[in-house]
Image 1 (cartoon, rainbow, N blue to C red):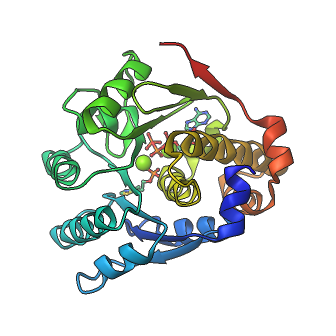
Image 2: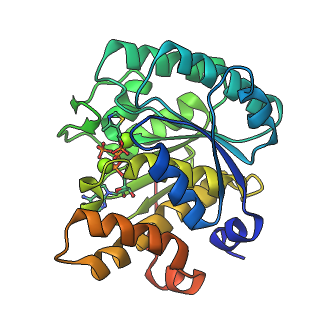
Length: 265
Ligand code: ATP
Ligand code: TZP
Ligand code: MG
Ligand code: MG
């Protein structure tokens, strides 16, 4: 059974501590996929929710000190209960505050998967890469080598997204070439992707790397079909059609269009 089928069959609860820009889009995207979103950040309840969830997704997009404490409480509870944790280090490197917070989070909990653009991932592991706000700047470094370095350092799956996505645990590396540039014209497509990775991890029974690679490819296939159906209508129509396709893409359609390549080290 594909991980996509497992997500839809198990309807995993995904606990999100996320930013104010994308909370609604992320919840609707998870629902469309077949997961069950729970957005909550109160200190009094995040540990309880993390413990009962299939995955915890931490996103620093609109950061403040209250949210940091929420993330620490949720992440540590997830670790205690063997619940996978996804970290989206939105804008790491853009300000010292964001960079410092990502260091604190990865030092105080075991992350299962780190998902960001190349500049964000670089800054989480102390490397430099140009960055413009929450978007990656131009750069000509070796993205796969950076991802492997980050995975070995953090002992987790690292997912670096862009035109092509690199997914690695430090020893096995996949490159996914599904997707469409219009994804960069809708805010929150990276954040929703991190939440979708959480849903796939929740349904993966520990096969983190393979589940993450399938999540990336599935997400890209949904975007490709949504773009075909909304072509000439602009990013607003794409956004709606993309949510539709997260629900409608079948395992068979996914398998026919999936482009996952294993990189030789
Ligand atoms: P950024 O803020 O730099 O845009 P992000 O957090 O929004 O980063 P992205 O790197 O845009 O995340 O990735 C979100 C999704 O968009 C991923 O599925 C990725 O594969 C896809 N994507 C990004 N850029 C392209 C592109 N040029 N062509 C095809 N797919 C893309
Ligand atoms: N500002 C702070 S968080 C955020 C913006 C625009 C959303 C970023 O979403 P994504 O998925 O990284 O494009
Ligand atoms: Mg983007
Ligand atoms: Mg992002």
